[in-house]
Length: 391
Image 1: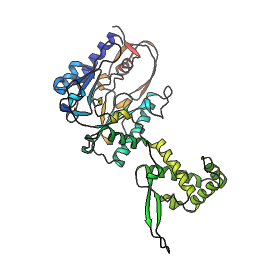
Image 2: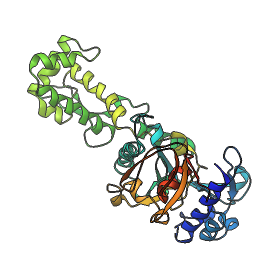
Image 3: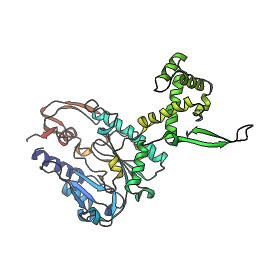
Image 4: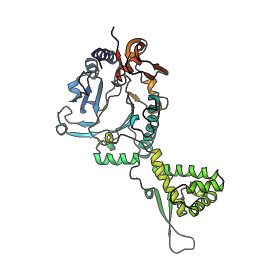
């Protein structure tokens, strides 16, 4: 990036911060702060190990320094400005989740557009929130569009603040479905058999919540598909699973035709063949329903995370804090475009043209010198695809 471009972006980031009031995180003075300036050095220069006391008033700091990126720590410390983690004296940490569109299994790099990648990332976010809200019962949750490729979720329930790395790892494993065992989803109940002296065990698949419900939902969807088929097609579909031959396929189809209500109630252990088939859907549930988070972020009790309300120096978009009820309607390529960059055009020299989708419009930008809406020009410049044209 040329100095002319950096100078322009520094100035416009300053203009944005002059007109924007940011809300700092809870216990902001107990957190480490860091930022990346607009420098001409190769690679990334991170200034960190700063306390809020050292930075001064946050709004004044942002206007004065005009950083390319600004972060605060998940961790809370007795001395957040100390130069080593040991000297900081860790006290507690938020539980942080990071979803990055570039790392999603559903995203095809080079084929999916930026808008498509972000839409898929939003779907993954909704799955993550289901785990956090419904399965784990967390309540103090903050949702943030990162300003770049995805979303951050901050959990600040008292129950999680003191968790060490290994306990955070257990939460990671749960939302990712890592190490999930089908037998863990089966409830066993001892019942008295009619006319029998010896009690028997009733085994049912959990259907009320968690991975049991997810497994059961996928299993019953498959059962209902079978019931729509004629017998030959249904048997063929069942035998497409490894280890299911004609006998097991017939037994499973009979159970589906004669006892769908029982299967709906979770009684998938009525026959060995049915149970073996249901077990396959635990794996399918993990593949389809897990939350593909960036695992090291969640386990790191000292992680620096982007400040909500700040500008992302790699996109020119705003890092947006979202209320839960706002999420469904939120469009990052519309709602995260700063008003500061709207209403005028600028001259840029485009070095890497292509499709740009912002504010509900699509721009096919050719290479070369041209005049563009400022928010498009800022987007291209921050992503290294254009330089500010000489005046």
